[in-house]
Image (cartoon, one colour):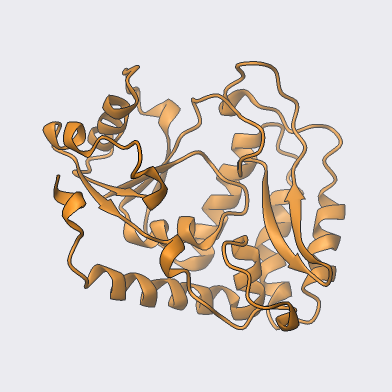
Length: 244
């Protein structure tokens, strides 16, 4: 099974779950970079509510994600201080920073290299089995979006696509099935796990960066949370749309 997503920065739990669910997570780096996504930013929880962590980038019209440089203004130390301040009262903040600090301080010139390094370290810290592959290295030649998805699945040896429920409105499952690819909707957003989160008086906020979860539960605790939720979900019958 393969999951395909543009390479995110400090991803949410849904992406991290895919690292356990799938044999391969393919990172769509050869598509245009767009503002407002999660390629260079993600959210954490602070005393003042939710806050974005953003890696500044330099961009030009039509620029691909793989060709997007990290701006010289990126201050890794400032970002680390922000995280430490936000999660100073959590039990595992140092455990999380131990993984994050070397990556942010490595001086990566390109956003895709920063994200790939961080995702690789997150996967290792979680003990997740999925391989990470850049789609630019898979040599899939197809202009049609659906055919490209099928080609990526073929290149990674998968006959099942682990797809976000947000793609239901446009993913052509019939065309994919004609190319030997079945879709399994992951429904991550609808079954987001709840855990004891920092700044509890604000209430639980879902869909934050995995930074939030690890600060509260540690890497082992976060992995256990993901494995438990995934196992329960996979025991359920696949939706009918998955076999279309």
